Length: 98
Image 1: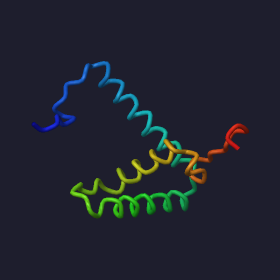
Image 2 (image 1 turned 90 degrees about the vertical axis):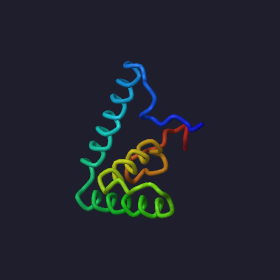
Image 3 (image 1 turned 90 degrees about the horizontal axis):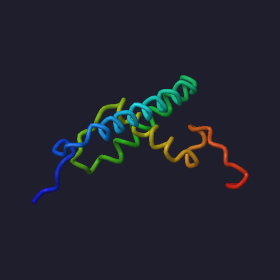
């Protein structure tokens, strides 16, 4: 028996709305971060994101989602792990983390 796919699962309306709200919030955070960057920084991030995605997916069956989605996915990951990407996220450790 195969596992149900995301499109096969009926979610309660409240949960589906929550997921949509969180996705919108993540996209807004990505847009806000990109807006703070200089044009050169945006281009560097875009190129690195695209290159990283392509290299990471070389041996998978997944179709490349396009430059825009690759950029969104990589910047979202940088935000999620902001301490690992301080140049992009402007993360500064607290006194307790130092």
